Image (cartoon, rainbow, N blue to C red; front, side, top):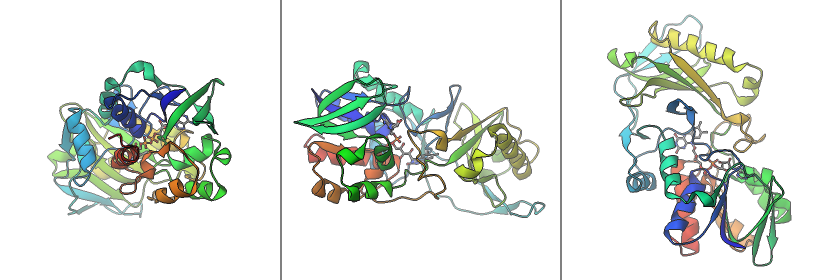
Amino acid sequence: MIDNLIIGGGLAGLFCAFRLQQQGENFLLLEASAQSGGRIQPASENCAIDAGPTWFWPHQLKMQALTQELQVDVFEQYIDGDTLFQPAEPHAPIQKMHYQQGTSFRIKGGITLLINALQAQLLRKNLRFSSQVKALEKIDNGWQVLLNNNEKVRSRRLFLALPPRMIVKHLTPKSWLSENAITHMQQQQTWMSAQAKYIAIFETSFWREYGLSGFAISHRGPLVEIHDAVMPGQTSALFGFVGLDAQQRKDIPSEDLKAACRQQLLSIYGKQAVPTSDHLMDWSNNPYICSMADIGESPLHNHVNLQQLYQNEALPNLYFVGSEFSQSEPGYLEGALDAVDSALQLIDIS
Ligand SMILES: Cc1cc2nc3c(=O)[nH]c(=O)nc-3n(C[C@H](O)[C@H](O)[C@H](O)COP(=O)(O)OP(=O)(O)OC[C@H]3O[C@@H](n4cnc5c(N)ncnc54)[C@H](O)[C@@H]3O)c2cc1C
């Protein structure tokens, strides 16, 4: 039997491992995918622009502290200049707007560098990828999980570093949670998990030369919100959120959707907006991130009643540390760090 088992190798799982290791605790981390990061992924192997989360904000002090601790460089999102608005009517002209965006931060080189920096601190032998947990049960003195290769792992403590809906979907909750708790968890959306992001790479950041911030709002689509995604000293880029929901996207070949996005960029930013390459990341296709319940819902932050879960359920030495369990910043990067810190405080490891 091992001391600490972590399920999930996204930001929460890796951060939990990092803190446990710092306290001299041994651990094993199991991640279903072939790589770490969870919702944090680059657009492609050759493109560091963020395909998942991009920003954290000035009030989010844990993210600021962690980037400093790991010596990961941070810069402010570019917001200087005008915003563009594309009305819904097909031939209506693009309008300029003065829209004051707030300050937000990004990670230089892409947010995957934060994941890489965390992983570089961890002993490789304690991380197991392509290891999907397919069942969980309570045993004497701890917990037992069953893996996709039918191997069983037993642990004294268990950290569930994944969203509530993934727990319900993959971890056979009927054998260890009450019906009420399962219903409550199933109601908690995995934030942004059903979204799709389009990323366009350019030779220059031409919009900045015309006094534009890169930020555009469209009522026409397919992109509904476009942002400057330039990686300083590396890549000129814009990214946009696709406005069609996951169900609608399923009927459109991704090459057709990308072509429609390219056409839209031309109509908003003019003839210079011809990307040298582009990428589409549809998160709803990832069975370890998105569930049927997430598809069709608009992004929203729920609130897990963690105190009630711990009080009403018999869950000895089990801790919920995925971002959605944070009581202050659920769904955010900051939430992943907060959920881990809160759990480690409960067991006096922090
Ligand atoms: C498009 C998009 C944009 C976003 N933008 C922002 C932003 O700008 N700012 C912000 O703060 N947040 C943003 N977010 C949210 C942010 O990505 C999350 O808060 C954060 O990454 C959550 O980390 P986590 O480790 O809690 O969960 P996850 O990243 O979901 O990690 C859970 C891990 O568990 C693994 N797993 C699932 N099931 C199993 C199983 N059965 N066995 C083993 N492993 C399993 C998964 O593969 C995954 O690696 C965005 C998310 C998306 C998708």
